Image (cartoon, rainbow, N blue to C red; front, side, top):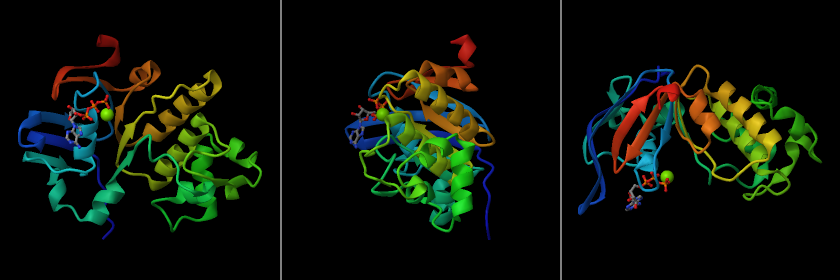
Length: 230
Ligand code: ATP
Ligand code: MG
């Protein structure tokens, strides 16, 4: 009953349009082997977020298909899909509630020990412990007393606990100070291990840790290679 995806994602001749007048992705093909980390870059409006939303089935293709381990996303049970594919966006970093609640989002059954283990894995435990009420500290949507870097670490702990086969990450554009940039980068590497990841990358340091960089322009991939080649 508990289906565990490998994380092989494929776009087969996908066409996608928000409105009939304008096709955003024309005849789009892409093969992402299980376990690969992709950095997706390209100018504004290129279609990066659209691609991410098709993988997380926020939208369905107008034509063609997106598959996970060979299965059309439309044929997956919604529960299996939500377990297998998790999208972390800048807007969804935190909601009102405690730090622990924020980490356990998507895994309401998680024990406190599991929450702490996830925080430790991504290097968030120390700063959480230093908050006035530790894991019980209330944070609001804007983060309250936590910094931008700390918000990202909390969202990474959440994704780590959810443990999806496929992680889609829209990297924050907000600049971090140097120590948190380093912490976030280390956390990211832990988070990416043993899963497929597509990161809409805004930092050069993220592009550097990817296995493969895709450059998108006008709904097409114009470059596809290892970071060192580009
Ligand atoms: P950015 O770097 O600015 O986030 P992006 O590469 O993520 O850009 P998308 O958001 O995928 O680009 O947008 C691709 C195209 O689709 C753009 O022309 C955009 O205007 C259009 N678009 C995006 N969302 C919608 C929508 N909900 N309805 C109609 N058009 C949309
Ligand atoms: Mg975008």
